[in-house]
Image 1 (cartoon, rainbow, N blue to C red):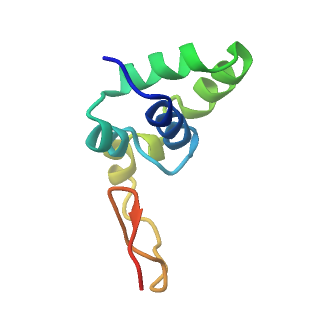
Image 2: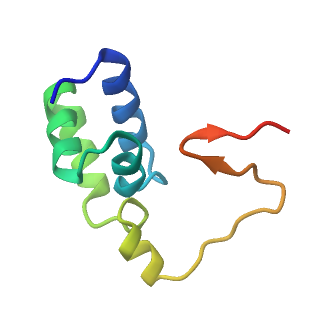
Image 3: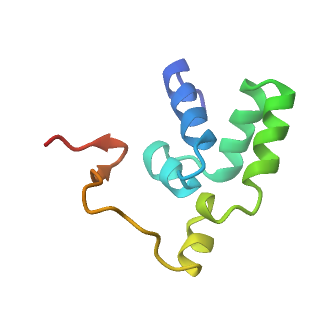
Amino acid sequence: MQYSDIEIDRIIEMAWEDRTPFDAIESQFGIPEKEVIKIMRTNMKPSSFKMWRKRVQGRSTKHTQLHQAQGSRFKCSRQKSISLNNISKR
């Protein structure tokens, strides 16, 4: 599938964030984790890709099922709710 430069930039940005699970990327863009990894591999410097892969492999926050198995995480009552990556307005 062909993605625009803007979509690729957003996918990489979301994948680079430690707290954004692959499931969120899949729900927003319709691409599975393996496709995200391919996009990261082809659009990043080899050293940056290796550093990212080392960081996210097995990380519970990147995999929703692993994260849920550890229990709920703290959420501040003043934290804005986020829906499909659009921050709600006050």
